[in-house]
Structure formats: C-alpha cells, structure tokens
Image 1: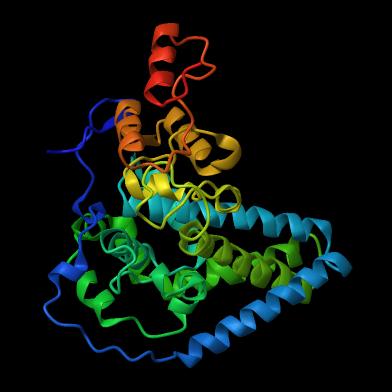
Image 2: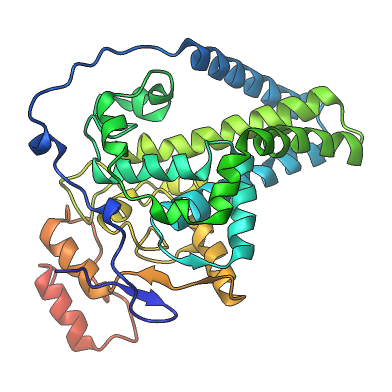
Length: 352
C-alpha cells in the first residue's frame, strides 16, 4: 500500500522514488564478500593538508585577515551548504520537491562551490545510504564507528557491496536532467573555478586582501568547515539524540547538527519520512535554514510540489515505534478543541 503523502501547495504527489525504501541487504546476500580495508593515501594526504590549512586559516581570521574576508567565508559556507541541503539532498536525491530551471541552475552552482562530488555521484551514494542504511552497502556505514562515518569512509576504498548495490538504484531522473548532466560533464573545469579560484580572487581584487588570507580563510577554512558540517549528519546524527519516530534505527534528532548543517540534523524523522521537503516535522526556521529558503523559493514560484507528511501519519508512527520523547499533540494549542487535547493526553498516558 502506497504511503499517504501530501504536498504543498498543490495537493497529492506521487509516492517517493524507489531508492528511499530500506531493504534488508543481509537477507539478500548468499555468502559474505571478502573485504580487506585499503587506505587511499592520496586522500589521506589531501585531507591532512586541508585541515592543517583550515586551522591556519582560523589563526589568520583572528590576526591578519580583514573582517570582510571572514564575512565572505561565512557567506560562502551558507551558500555552498544550500547546494548540498536544498540541492543534492532534498531536490536531487529525494525528489522532495520540484524546481524550475532557474533554481536548479542556482543550486547546481552552489553545489559546485561545496565540492562534495558532482550531483549525480552525491545523489547516487545518498540513495544507496537510505536503501541499505547501516550495512556494508552504506557508503558511510555508522556501525563501523564515528570516525569512519564522519571522514574515514573517504580515506579507504569502498566496500564491494557499495559498488554492487550502487548499480541497482534508480538514477534515470538524474540522467534526464540537463543541468545535472552538464555539471557532471564539466565538473573538473567548473569545480576549481567556483570552489577555489573565485573565493580567493574576490577578496584580493575587491577589498585588497592578501593572497595568504584569501586562500587560507575564504578557500581552505570555508571548504573544510562546510565539509565537516555535512559529515556530522553522517556521524553525530547517527550516534547522539532522541528517536521520537523510530527507536529501532540509528539516526537521531540532533539540534547541534541541525543548526550547523542548515536543518539536516532532524535525522530520525528524515530516515522515517525521507520524502518530506522539510526533513523535519515542523518548519522551525531557526534550526532549519534550508526549509526557510525553500519556502521563499516556493513563494516566488521557483519551487513547487513540495512534499510533506500528514500529521496523522506522523502521529501513528510515533505511537507505534517512537522512543516516547515526542511531545503530546495539541498541548498548549489554543486553536485545538479541548476534547481533542484531552483525548491526546489520555492516549499518551498524560491525563491529569
């Protein structure tokens, strides 16, 4: 039976794409695959340099960099983050809403600024992550530890199951998007220009910043910070936090991650209802900057068919599999009939 999905502002939307339905990979395997961890030393060297350079960038921010350079770096972090959260994640991985070409083009540029692989590869890996979550086929399998799920998965060769199962997810929608295919084709040209050249040259030419400050603050620190905020969704949000929607899975509600990852930290909800464009039950803009951005795009007509989950469906799931941390529906809501509030209190064992 297809899930009861609603959308804003146009009504019923088709069910989520196939890749978001988790499956039991262990039941599909006939025999264990041999896997020997192999370190990719090139990546190790590059990430060590990046993080050392980022720390030096922090030092320069407080000693010699101009305030405009720091503000520029923060702005780039916010913009590039949207390229991941609103773009690669909510739009292209989950198809949680639809976007006109103007918004898709803008998000593609923002995504290129983030330099976390092109949209096609990012979305493919993320669909595999949801379908085979916390198994060997999950690219950043959290059961292999915090370090692995945060950055370690990028320092070793992929498990064979990741490659094998990655071939089974549906990607035709990405292949038919001309903006996605354009970025994929010219990524090695676009990425260095958008991610490193422009962020470095703008401070030099517009407010006479030194190359050293521009490179280590606007490029290195900003890029490393954005990466780590994204990685926290894979690591911290799979280890720490409440599980009001499903206590049987690792993803959890993590306020800190939600703040720094622009709204992606409400992870228990997201893994239960991955097609919701908010990636959260409520549109709390203070901890979900991406939702505020998408709501604004919907107002100007660039985003549409935004998928949401009916409260009744959320409530049933909380009552069935939640850990009990979810608040009572209707509590303190002056617009809700009192008899409904009382019924909700009784159902949740909190009647006076």
